[in-house]
Image (tube, rainbow, N blue to C red):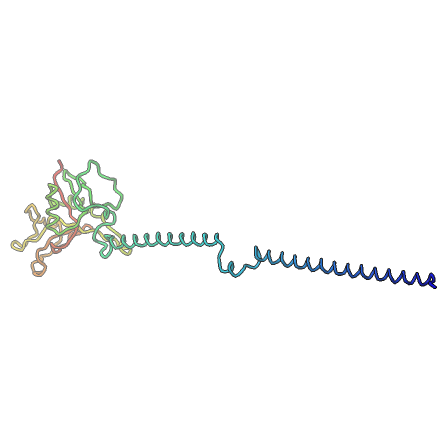
Length: 268
């Protein structure tokens, strides 16, 4: 005989079994969903690392293209700067080696180094007095023109150079002319360690051993009291002796020395 209580117990047992199966199925489905989500997340993280995260071994050793381009440009600029610096340095060394003032600062006045050797033509107008003139201009006084040449040479060379200009080496006739020449000579100088050094110029005066006299190129004797020159006849090893003027003073020297020249000619 089946009672109501038996039916109720069987019904509750059947319900428990159904609910247990449903819970088991739900748990398995939830576990599968979680596993699939974890696999998807790992796949997404792996993809992001390959694209922009930690570089793969093949990408780790390869620099980006824009970095290579920047390095190439910088290297090219450095090479260009080095080339320019080398050229400037080479030019500076060459100029220093070819400078006329190197070795002997008295070779030529600083203001005349750009001029070519040779006697210039007489200009129509004389330049203004700058206080430090270049020996290259004719100047006129008392009907006579004088040229303080920019080229250097021996006494004989100066004599020939003046003749090529239809002139002759300077012959000073009187004190007035001497004062004018001194005034001009004081304008040709340079500073050497805070000391004024005047340029020397040959004039047409030399010593004749036969007559034991100082004689001008026009064959006139040196006027008494014009210059104080000693008799050089005892200096047998000096050879022929000629006279140059420097800073207003007349000095004897070997005719083979090289100095500037003073030419003169009658004004036309």
